[in-house]
Length: 72
Image (cartoon, rainbow, N blue to C red; front, top):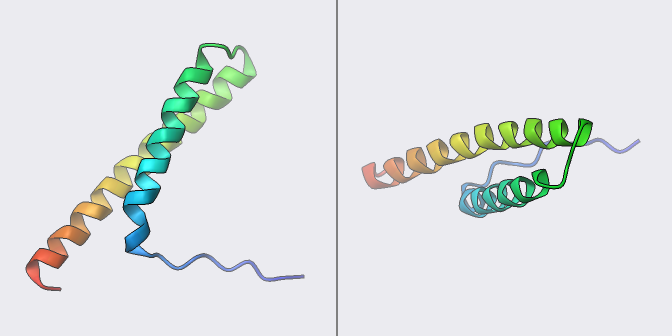
């Protein structure tokens, strides 16, 4: 059985990941118009997790920018 190791955190990917998360959330918002029942609830729950992820990514990007400015 192959071991599944976490991917290393590459700060260069953060802006790309942020844009992808925002795009996915917008697409899911569009899909909400046509969903109902359990599918509607699943999409809403996933978008809530995306909002958290987007917030965390924005914070991380800001912190990295500040570190770069401060010479760390």
